[in-house]
Image 1: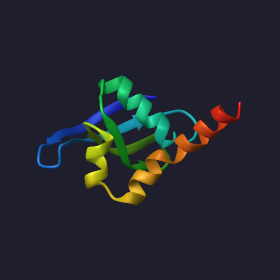
Image 2 (image 1 turned 60 degrees about the vertical axis):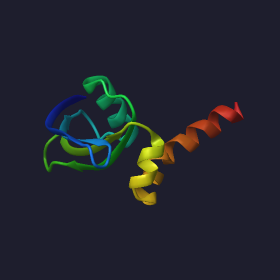
Image 3 (image 1 turned 120 degrees about the vertical axis):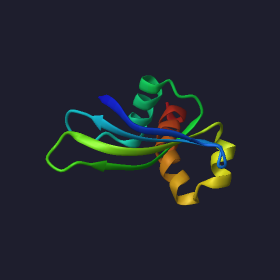
Image 4 (image 1 turned 90 degrees about the horizontal axis):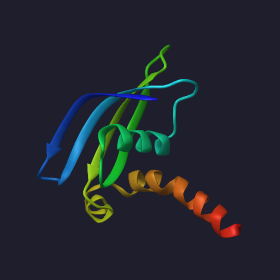
Length: 102
């Protein structure tokens, strides 16, 4: 997967960094967790990443991504809507349950 940053700006009022980028991939559109990992590696991000949307481009192996980076999860919980935060933590519960069962 390849990440190309289109726009990156700091929003000091809301204590976050907003990133618009295009990801290039092979196969199906990657899930939110894979996109987060790739953003962390490619851009060297620290903090709590919230993927707001992933929009695949028709007929291309590319997608437009809008992500927000907060300094901590507590700051994100103050600002973001609950349904967006549930999407971000949805996959973690399943993985933790599998580890506990083993």
